[in-house]
Image 1 (tube, rainbow, N blue to C red):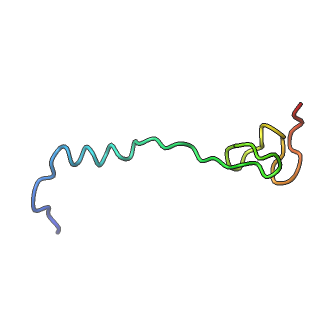
Image 2: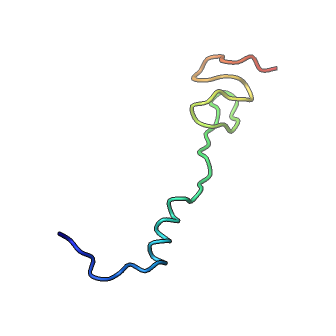
Image 3: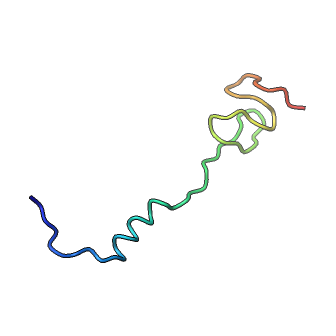
Length: 59
């Protein structure tokens, strides 16, 4: 059975755990119709289109 040769320091293990909690900015894409910035796989809030068809009536 594999056994660690030396004890892992508290700082090393804590920094490894902390990297999993890092927050990243959400992904962004542009609307193919109006060019507005939107979340991927969502209806465009500016024009109401999704995948080339009208999904919402936006006034």
